[in-house]
Image (cartoon, rainbow, N blue to C red):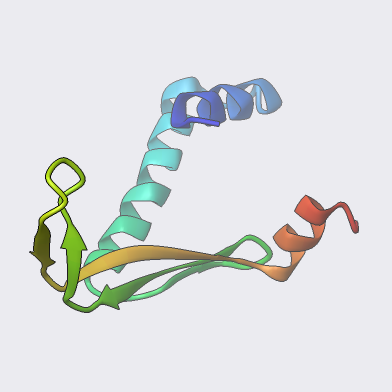
Length: 94
């Protein structure tokens, strides 16, 4: 599902709300999660999962075209860990 599909689903399920308001709400939620991760924080949505930032150290990679060794610098990457309720639903246990 992409962002526009999420918005359309919410519009269909909530006919009493305007689409522009739902777009603003969804955008605000994503923006706040992004801001929190930029600051190195953690954003948790109970029953769904938690977003956090993990650090990856320097490593030696390979250029896929030439096969030559390439130094890949340290970086921070976003990480998502699914909550228990989400894992159970995906697994079909609930």
